[in-house]
Length: 67
Image (cartoon, rainbow, N blue to C red; front, side, top):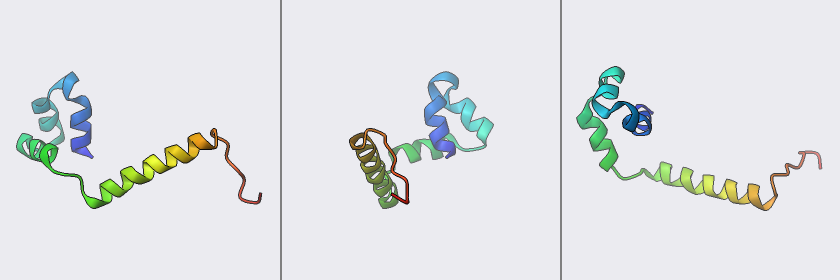
């Protein structure tokens, strides 16, 4: 979570400043950037894509559970 925040805010504040504020090492952040996504993260991304697709196909209409 911290590294995601650093990636999102690095253009505004810079990696060294954010790492110092969050108490993480710059080398740890840069190693995280190079790391491949885990199998769990890949499944989460696939699931998110499916959810968006189903939502668009239903035009955002949600059916009630009793219907």
